[in-house]
Image (cartoon, rainbow, N blue to C red; front, side):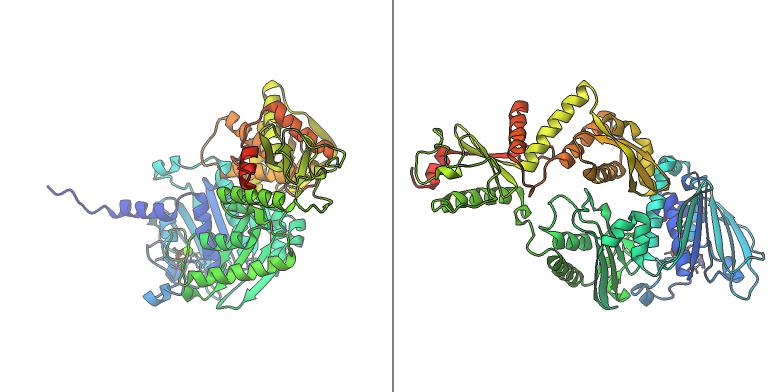
Length: 585
Ligand SMILES: Nc1ncnc2c1ncn2[C@@H]1O[C@H](COP(=O)(O)OP(=O)(O)OP(=O)(O)O)[C@@H](O)[C@H]1O
Ligand SMILES: [Mg+2]
């Protein structure tokens, strides 16, 4: 008996539909992209229950002629490509002729449309079975409504997430489409409540402002380079606006939002040394390239692309962006941040070695020493290597000195140790916050008037969902509108200026989670993020009492040698090691 048989058409269609239609956001994506391809200048999207109950998209595009409606839900029916060659130079967002048939196979669809100068028409489909096409008087354009998604594929329906999560994906999607197409007016509403109202604009910067706040939009560094064949416009946030993940990098290739590790890599590489490693710059990149030079047919939802000459694209982007950043922030690259941990460690050791070798001919360098640091009155410490050219002025006894506003050096019985001031302080704060959380809650400072913060719709939902988590660390933050938060109180350890960045870090992390986590695990992550934001930074000059306080608390808490992120806080050097380097042994 044979085991292989041909699947019934209906089942085969449902399987194929699964490739394109994974969740409500994929339906919205396909419908809105069709509207854009139809030349719409106005697109209105209405959702019910996160899109699971209904999704409707109306546009004022060119419309679909009545006779074409008969074919519209058939697989592989498209007006956008005609022959194989067209596939190698796609100029529209759609080209497969699969979206509408896939959507129709797993929902109840209603479509009305009219083209200029002709009477409109209506067609419906339930689970792929379509009705007759009937005339209907409607304005030029198309309106499609999709109800009861996955009503006939219950297994798939089970995979849908909470309504707020599905809605979050849709708002992210519309945000990206709206940034790619600033000249189109977009409206999005959910359960009859307006979520986005985005009037058409000539400048994408204004759109960015609508989502990320006018202040960020105003401060963006604007770079344009190249031409239609290969060129780009990049809008880059000042470097204090870094994020904890790449979600703050928006990349568009020929008006298509994509995730592309090559382009992300080029941006990261261009920023190298200008921002702390492990952080990501906020960047909006609009790349233009000859459609024949890019393959968009490599991913079911077209989120990934392939360049024919990827090294040229990479090099063009990297060199132009890097050159501009170097002009913007001359001489400020933190070269210490480059390389792997081991390389960095080796370099720090080398620098320290060099420093002591140099100090044989002392020249007094102000600023290198923390206030309250060295004075020549201090006799040489007994524990330190016997004699040999260390000027007393350079080493306070058992004092701690700050080096390059970044490291703290301290004498020990065996030699000396050097700590990364940020990592050490972070570790101390993490320990202290943990202790307080176990014993009671963390103290907070109240604001007389709340601090406002611009966020996305999804962020507002995330805040609503995790209110308890935030209040445990003394942060009182509440939604103050569809896209803004009001911060009423912040944890005592955190300065108000750092608070928005801290909230941003935590939102990014929570929104990236793919599975549920226990409350305590989230709380610990929150404590780590708080410690990181509240800790002194590399490059920050510290006063004597500040240095003392950090070092004392570190020794009281007996903190481990790694910061909560796993980087070392402190390196140890022994007298024996030094003697070896000086050729004493
Ligand atoms: N809003 C719309 N306005 C005008 N025509 C539309 C609209 N939506 C769909 N169409 C027409 O229906 C056809 C089929 O749409 P569908 O989305 O299934 O395929 P596609 O866009 O050609 O390719 P893809 O599957 O890659 O999206 C399109 O080629 C287009 O001619
Ligand atoms: Mg399409």
